[in-house]
Length: 115
Length: 115
Image 1: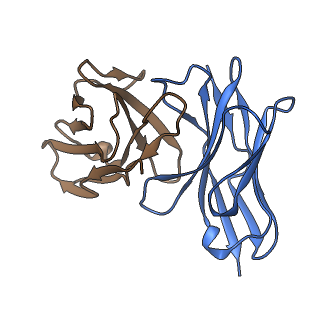
Image 2: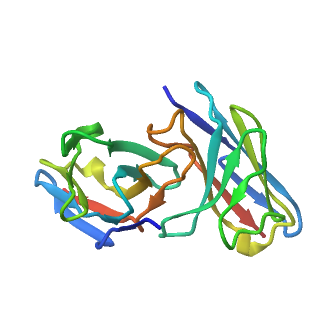
């Protein structure tokens, strides 16, 4: 069975500084990896995904993530944080088979960007 | 593209009544949709996988007679919470995928409050 770990419940970053939200995963074989963002009382919005290819994936709103197979990590990054980036971020994994499998989510990390 | 519409966005019902939540893929066909439940400040828990034209697949611990899922067409899945009780109060989110490796797209969720 696959699992996702987001070790930080909350990350605080000053506006303009770089941010990192950590994610590690466990899955048999090669994974599909995703990052989603959730604003209060809303569904999840897709940010980016890694399927194959370049380990550095660029996504929406200036976010990027780096797939590191040896460390089984997929940390979310942004060079310069905005106050509007404050939200709940979820890392998720899907087995390579994809198809009808739902995602397994991490517990989420609250990102707070301070003005 | 790839918009998922979920309705209603919030509902308050009395204990013992049933509530139906609709999930529609607006601009793509989805043979598979997923229903998640999210408790406050917690991650999403997959409840069931909704398959068009066949029975839903429920995750362990989810009562299939309480959470009725119907996937009547390639663009519509419904979740009915039968004989709702206060402990069923939660945020329910549906999602759908256009094809195997594409990301899941989420509805905006339904806040259910059972009094």
